[in-house]
Each structure stands twice: as structure tokens, then as C-alpha cells.
Length: 130
Image 1: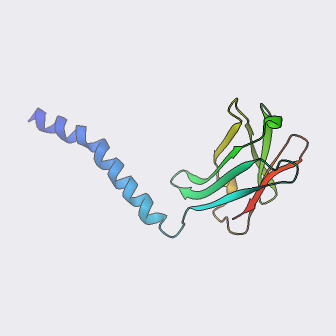
Image 2 (image 1 turned 60 degrees about the vertical axis):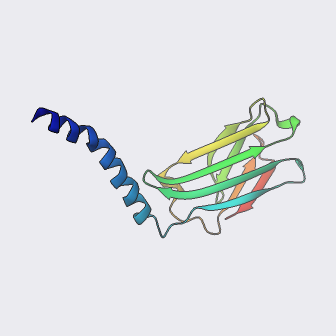
């Protein structure tokens, strides 16, 4: 009898994970993941980037990934969504940076919102609109 209980309790986390994953897909079926390519500014023509927005179980998630020219190596860049600063990223030695933010303050709608990546003095590096 004890072996059966151990087997059932051992499978419980797996079953719960599968159920939650299924519920997330059903609950979020109407909220698609959006992705945009960010356009370089005239000040940093070699910069490239992309941004994605989705709503998951933990809330709205914004991911911004960039690759920048040598001039921005080691810099801390500001990221804003819809004109509101939402975070920063530091450029690594490979001249890349990433912001992965999950926060209810992002809201659940992204359509029409602009993403801007700027330097510490607010010079535009990259931008795009969902």
C-alpha cells in the first residue's frame, strides 16, 4: 500500500505542471506574443535589436535584445515602453545587451506602444512600435 502512495505523490508535481501549462495556453490563447525589429537611430546606425511582448502566468513580459557599435561597449542603456522608462540593460563585452522584464506595470496591451532604447543622456539608439 505504501508503494502506491509514493508513486502517486511522486507523479503529482508532473501532473500539476502539465495541467498548469495547459491552463496557461487556454487562458492566453487570445493574447498572442508580439515581436518587432528595432530600427537604429542616425546616431548609432550599426545598432540592431528586437523586442517581444507577451502575457504569461507571471504577468506581462517584455524582452528587449540589442547589439550595438563599439562606442557603446560597457554602457548602460535605458529602455522605455510607451514613453515610460521600464528598465536598463548593460552592454556586455560582446557588445550585446538584454532586458527581460516581467511586471504588472507593463499592462496587458502592447498594440501601438513604442519601444525606445537610449543612452544615459537619453540619446536614441534603437526604436520600434508594436
